[in-house]
Each structure stands twice: as structure tokens, then as C-alpha cells.
Picture 1 (cartoon, rainbow, N blue to C red):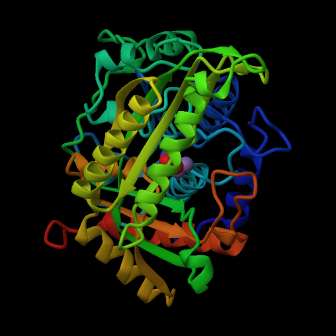
Picture 2 (cartoon, rainbow, N blue to C red):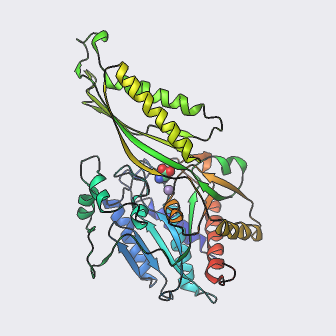
Picture 3 (cartoon, rainbow, N blue to C red):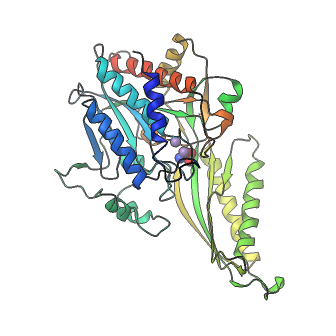
Length: 424
Ligand code: HGY
Ligand code: MN
Ligand code: MN
């Protein structure tokens, strides 16, 4: 079945306007007003094509086909609509618009004899922009997160996830009969899940290859560090008497960077993306500094080894500078290998369409990780990111690459929907 490429690009372009930072990238945090507008437009489109919509207690959305049969195994396909701050116009939303394009094409054309159902899934809070934890919605779907995390996860303004959900009109405690589905979901009848995504790195763009077929996804571990020194007057305090937590943080960050940059296989990465200084005035020696550190790699043992060494160095630096140090585990996800069977269907479909591809790993994490970790056979397809840029306003992909990726997704889904038991 042919997708409608023009409709895909029009829908993608329309989502750019749901942003708190028009003109400087896309900012659309889950549970915010722009997210609500984006959801509304998706739900209106689903209703217009006669597709039933379900929403769960943390805002994950699932949209089925009217022809879905109760009890039949389902193919899931989707991604996320939330973004980082001043992010790009494609991260997540490209996979959602593509899954909606597949849904609409299937709803319009009907399907050859199908042995499975099809559902578009939109995961909430994938970026973790509110609470600092990536893949939050899918962690609730799989039961990795539960009620206690509704209190544990807090936004910068101090509001818990439970309070943020309530303000967004979502109630975590869902009683039977309420219009929200409970979490976790029963995934036992999900035959496969597919996520189409921009690569967010330079590999495909540099190689001039239009499709990436993902075989593994990096793991990550995030800790939060709080360094407390002695705030004081910037002008009247001699250098020899200072206990400056920001200088200590600078030393910690450079130590972490040089350690991981020396990684022999050059794939491990460490990032300090968030740093808060109190009281953050140019003429005051800071009192407290709070910053995130995340380590990612394809090997879990290496992630933990690096993080332990980083934590050790931080404690040592704090001691030498007589600065108080607290380190809290924040979130993590293990590296994982995606399903060989689904990857083979993607590879054969690309081959028969004459599309050149590269099998590759992903340094970015995706909701596909959580669904795969819940033992659902999962596959991912990448399209190139121009200059390898992502999580920034410059994020972009050529229109023909976007359409090609969605058509390949359509073709793979068609195969999975009509697979017989033996072929599975
Ligand atoms: O952080 C990530 O890898 C993803 O973009 N949330
Ligand atoms: Mn993403
Ligand atoms: Mn992202």
C-alpha cells in the first residue's frame, strides 16, 4: 500500500506550531498547553477516520483501527510527541506522524486478509523534560515505574508527577469505569512493535545511506550531584578562604569528560546537560550547585564502571575543596539488542524495495527500549539527520528521506499484519 507522502509532510509541518518557543526550535513538554493542543489535533484526526482512542493514567495514547478484532494479537507502531527545550521538529513526532499515516492508509484502504490488529501508540514524557527521567510513559506502561514514582519524580518547580498529571486532567488512580486506562498495560498480546525515528547522529548522513536498521540501543545511567560550599561576597573573600561549589563542579565535569573521552572503543559518552547555581548572582560566590551526569554505552558493565569512577572522583574533589557532596541515583535503562526476526523483516523489505540501508546501533534511547525490555519483539528504522544534528532547532531531514522511511514502515507493517503463524 502506498502512503500519502504529501499528507505526511503537511501533518509534520503542522506540529511545528505546537511550541512554547516559536522561532527558536520546538519546545513541547508533556502535560503542558502545547502538548494538549498537539494531542487534541491527533485525537480529532483519529475520530475523523473512525479510529477509537484510549488514554491511560499517565497520558499514553493508543489508537486502533475500526477493523481490529477483539483478542487478536496486535502490531504496535509509534513514538513520542514531547520534545526537549528548544528542540527539533522531528524527534519523536516523525515516528508518530508516520504511525498515524500508516493508520489512516490502513483505515482508508482496508487490508488484505490480516491475522493481526494494528495500533498507533503515542508515549508520554519520553524526553523526561519535566522530571529528568527519559521514557517515563513507557516505563509506566511496562510496570518499571509505579505509584511510588508519581511522588518520587518531581519537576523543577517542585511539583510531583502526580500533581502535574492532576493539573493536566489525568488521574493516576484510575478506578474501573473511569475513562482512563490503568497502567501497566497487558502487552502479552502484542506480536511486535515498530518505531520509526530520525537517527539524531551523523552516521547515515555522512555515508549517504537513506535507511538505518537498528540492531541495538545504548543503555544509560543518570545521577544528580549536589555540591554545597560557603556562599560569600565575591569581592571581599580571599581566594585562599573560598569553598566554591561551582569551581568544584567544573573540576568534576572535566574529570568525567577526560575519563570517558579516553574510552578505547570511542563509543561511551558522558554528558552534564543540566546545571543550577544558587543564588546565581555574578557578585556572589555560589552556595550550592546541582547538576546531572549521564553515562551511556552499549555495555552495561562499562556504564556502571565509568559511573562508579566518576562518583569516586567527585567525592575526592569535594573532600579536597572542603565542599559537601550528595549524589542521588536518578534513572537508568539497560543496553539492549532488538529482535532478530523483526529486524530481518525490515531488512528484507528494504532489500526488495531496492533501498540501501545500514544496520547500526543507537546512542539515543527510545520508547522501543522499554517495549523490547518487556519481551515484545521490537524493531527500529532510522532516517538520516542532516549534519547529524538533533535536540536543537537545526534538526532536519530531507523530505524524500522522511517519505521513504514512512513508506518502508508501511511495507513492513503490511508484512507483519498478514504474517501467518508459521512465518512468525
Ligand atoms: O535522551 C535520549 O536519548 C532521547 O532523545 N530521549
Ligand atoms: Mn526521540
Ligand atoms: Mn529526544
